[in-house]
Length: 426
Image 1: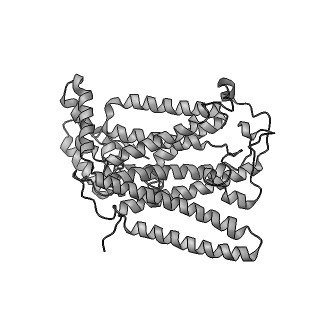
Image 2: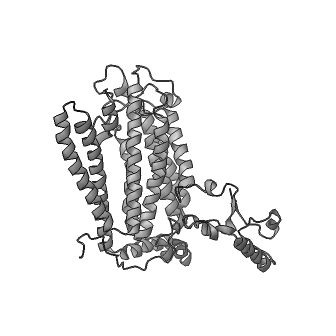
Image 3: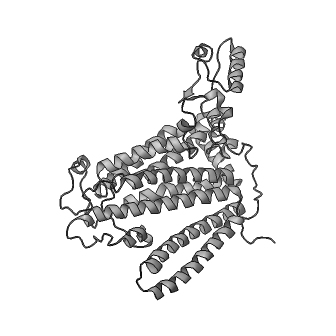
């Protein structure tokens, strides 16, 4: 019986699918076929910009709109399932666990069982019509949402422990950056900038093939999930006086959780009070945005290296502006912002290509020449860390490299004379 869901069939795209193996690098998508570097070198310097424009136009013409539309429908359904899952969680604790009347509990318990069964059936139906890449993306998205909810519970605990103070801690950023007014029009800008880069990247990712599109999105969800898991472990350990205006004595917007039911059901703007206090170390704004900016720059640099320095300068400027807005709005102390950037950066480069970092799989290091034996998710190193052989002994050196690859042994230190450009990773 044919399915009515537009993403249930294997799409026949207008472009030729990538010939890369299944576990290739996240940034090896269809732009490889356009090879912007070659396009820029084939024409004069004056025509470089037009060549890049033609490359993007050619890429857009190869997009299968039907496939993209089906993928968008899948994204909408995945978001809907996530929302229903959160509502199911709230329904259980607020209407089944919290009431003291047993009759009310029984009535709402029956409703909750039916609602949960419907949500699970709907989730299974959507997944049964999706391919492997889509199911992997849904797994990453659901993991991110689950960890985000637990992190919010941790921030609610920090809110309970928080004590309002008229004077925030002494902070160098507060001394250098003036405080925004409570009714300032700039105050919501930090939240807008936090969401801008992920949304922009999400839109542009739809010009990729489905496999590479899902791989890029999986990377973002994976890095953001790990960053939020680390924040979950730190945010409620030490209570600091909140510098935000709504965290000061006498504020009309200060409503901390009153019970453990509030702790597990307040999940931000969806349900409960959006404002919170005491959830400072480290900044979720900066961790989330830094992950998105790094992923965006890495993917673009792989295929459009011409303006790499300009893009990285703009990315750093973007993060500085966001950090300044967070500090000027007194949403975070400066240490929260700096730690958010540092932790997100380290997490990104450790978990960019998988849930297990490289140092865990290869604690004693691994020569780049042996990357053919690496897991499929890390074979990107064959191209990113290429080995260039120079000199008269090229054939002999290549034979030694092949022997080392087949025997799965590290290159000896004496080989550096014949292979001067060999890079090792630890």
